[in-house]
Amino acid sequence: MFNYNFRWNQALNSLPQMLEGALVTIEIALLSMLIGIAVAILLTVFRLSGNRILSAIATTWVEIARNTPALFQIYMVHFGLGDFGIHLSPFLSLLIGIAFNNAGYLAENFRGALKAIPDTQARAARSLGMSAGKAFRHVVMPQMLRISFLPMTNQMVWAILMTSLGAVVAMNTDLYGVTSELNARTFRTFELFAIAAVIFYVITKAITLSARVLAARLFRY
Image 1 (cartoon, one colour):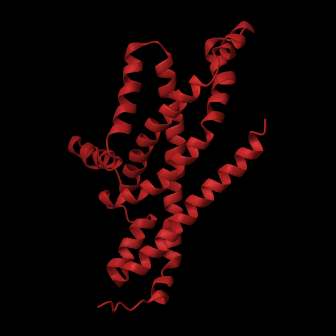
Image 2: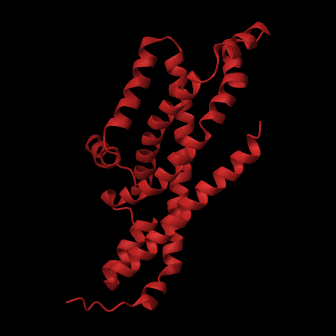
Image 3: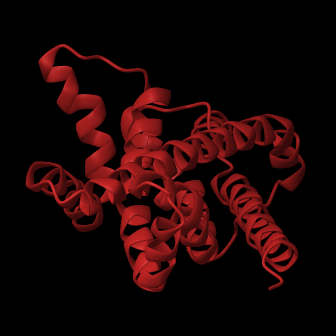
């Protein structure tokens, strides 16, 4: 018989701690996106370089990031590197694991965006005296980032949700970690995780809506 007694007041008293955890979640996701974008651009350049070794490095990164679970990637950063004497904090392990995953997906998004840019754009820039590097930085890359803007938003949402995987490396300062510790002390599982789910939902919807507004302002033409 269903006789669970809801105690929302007890769970809501923990809201300030959960919001602090949400800030850590946002911090990890944002940093992982910035790192992921930078690395993804580098991987894209590797693919365009014509160098077989660099191209192989980029392809291998993308294949591993896209075709293995993110949980495994985080686990390998924390425990796998530990076998070689490299011991990272849970925060850093989670950050690197998510950034690795982001870079792989974003590099593939950038590759698709490049295909949508006519080759004449780069040729026109070269005809004006630009080097290949300058043509990519000043002509091709801005268009690539513009085309990839909404896919990058989706990846940011995914990065927010991936922070919950920090549980596997004993991360206890993010939203999921804080909620788990509160649950261990209070045993108000339904109430606490329901509130955490709402916070996750609000964060991801805010990111999505903000991106749409920003895209409408930045990319009117």
